Image (cartoon, rainbow, N blue to C red; front, side, top):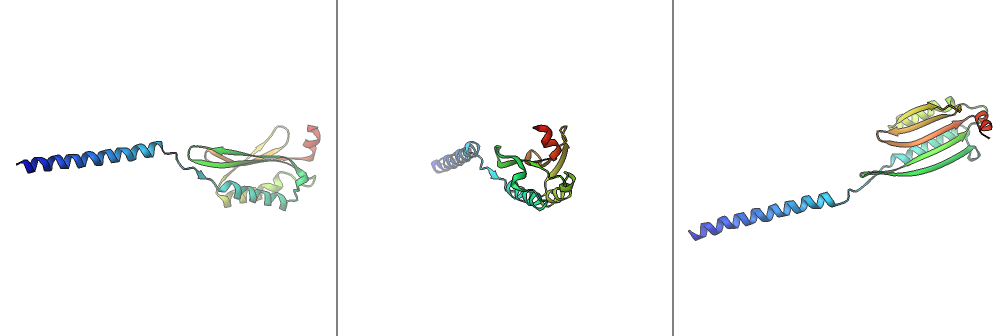
Length: 147
């Protein structure tokens, strides 16, 4: 009879050890930092945008400003690229739109267009909760009125 009692206690001890192990695993998953997914579409997208700009005759001398912001969330990390480009007299923002739409489609991101009050046009490449690239195209006439 003593053997059956020891067997029941042994089972309860094993269950208790398994429960402690599972609780420990749960706590470890909660406090362990989430590994951040590095978003790679940002750099590939920026390269394609630069290719479109160069193909349309934009040179380094036409870049008014450009900068990059690193963005982080709990689960992801990516870069946002900002460019302000002075257009040559024979180009309009419309000259770039078809190519920008093609890039957005290939890269599977959204594209929005904003006509600014100063006459410039901003194209924004994005996905839900993320902005990847903002390209503002400024006509020569608008640049002269800024200075």
